Image (cartoon, rainbow, N blue to C red; front, top):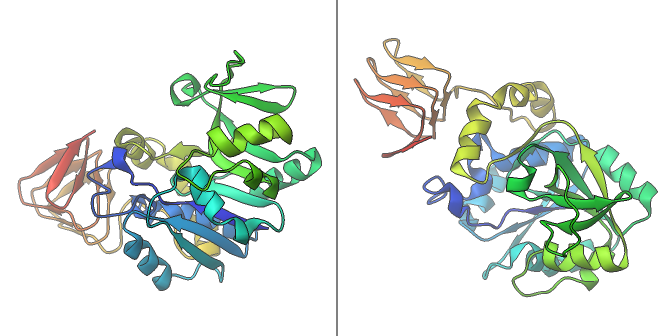
Length: 309
């Protein structure tokens, strides 16, 4: 089975982090976010992944040229004009039309058991299976309407009145039949492909009860790095074994003066913190310089900028 990784978005809600860095390479606990997805694929035995790209494509190309993810074949699909989640997938139909495939976002941090998801899908006989996750924030994020083991609605957009505490995790196993309902123009996979499967093939779901974090906003990015990091850090041995990259609070490439005070913070590659500086409950992006006497508290900081959390 092949995988398709959605990685072409602008990351608008993450600015200024994404002004010069594509969202898939924004680091979470010193690991580019897409690596958490690649880890799941590698651990589940995937040999090939198609990745759509658009924003800062040269950075993503360079990243994959420098890293080998357990020998996994990476095929990049560059969109000169961004096509959305539906159009981007439709563009790669010729690479995915020979059997079921996995669809997964590049900006989620999770420990979804992909083998279990695939097994559940195969037993269902349906056109697709979405991985869903229960959260008290479902109404805010987007509730999935379910009934009798099937997905029937999203945010009540189909007027079913069905609501649940479950959200879509950005992970699914899909039949190539989905391509019948996709548009090759800019479009959402929910409005086209998922709706088509609901109406014609049936769309099931698998409930994931483990780690799931979305980093699509500055607030979520901050919380994932600092408030939700304990369970993510526990993935370290598995990730290191699978892809040779693993989460950590402080980069080995950072320089922290003995006279600096750093507590409950993530410190990125090539950061420099001078004596007398204070960094508390903050995330320092790569190449951030904290000068003597500076105080960064409850914030996200990058080279030349600070955003309060």
